[in-house]
Image (cartoon, rainbow, N blue to C red):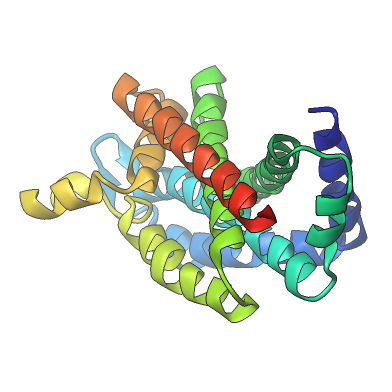
Amino acid sequence: MQGFIAVYLRELLILKYRFKRVLAGMAVSPLLYLIVFGYALGRSIQFGEHSYLEFLIPGLIAMASMTQAFSIATDINVARFYWNIFEEFQAAPISNLAYVTGEVLAGITRALLAVLVILLLSLPFGVVLSLGPLFWLAVLCNCFVFASLAVGLAMLVKSHADQSLLTNFIITPMAFLGGTFFPVDKLPEWSQILLAFLPLTHASSAIRASALGQPVQALDYLILVVTGALFFWLALHSVNQARD
């Protein structure tokens, strides 16, 4: 398992080299959402005791932690198809478990950085969130789910172009349907049932409730943990298959 440190540090060195560009990329979309939706509509629409801006920021945190955790798949595919780095890992004395753990941790690190960016961007808007242990637990669970999914799917795709299709058909729809921009309970009951199968729906619920000081649902955390464990197993299985 000690090999995961080498995998993780490699990804951190790449992140350090691209830090300014990555940071700018993490800031652009959330800033646009905050200005367009939050500043323009955030004070005029209320959801109970909270403004739409207060509703929106936890949703942006859930969405950004998902997309940035999943973006580790792009780096893995570039390393596989263009730099042949995965072949070097195959030859190195690093176990599959260590490789998956290192890549998942790298995805989680990128996602946490994106969350910090959003929290900093939200400061000028005057929104005060409760950033307690339950908030960070929900964020970490969400990061773990999608970083594990990213590693698993990165091993299954056959080309770098296929990775873009996965993002377009899985991540992008989930970003808009997972309760990030609107309350899921305002939708018809049949659609609520369908959206309950999306892990981001539970992540948005847990992050928003904890950030706004509302009662959290233990079921949301349980679903995220179980889903993350299943995706981590998928990632490990996919790496085993890729190495065979």
